[in-house]
Figure 1 (cartoon, one colour):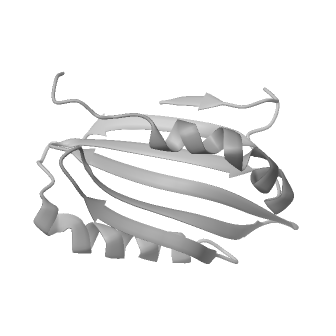
Figure 2 (spheres, rainbow, N blue to C red):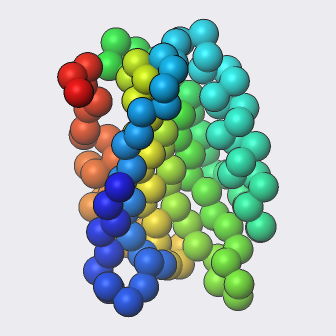
Length: 123
């Protein structure tokens, strides 16, 4: 995976991308279980509030995403988390602001990063 951040000494504001092979094919029928596990994991984060979430399956990918605020020490952070599945591959993309205000300020820049890529069938 890779992490992009405006400050190399801090990962509080960042975009993270990780793609891995799960070793098993993910099917549309798996979406309900994926969504439940995804939301349970987000809810387990201290101070978590899920502002919105979505689950979808289309010809390009199967996916879940959510916007979440959470407590990190004394600070409330905000992030957008997206998981996409194509055959046996999983892409995890996270865009996070060091604060809610920083996330809201950067959201117009985060949006194309989280929504304009596609997993392909090749190796």
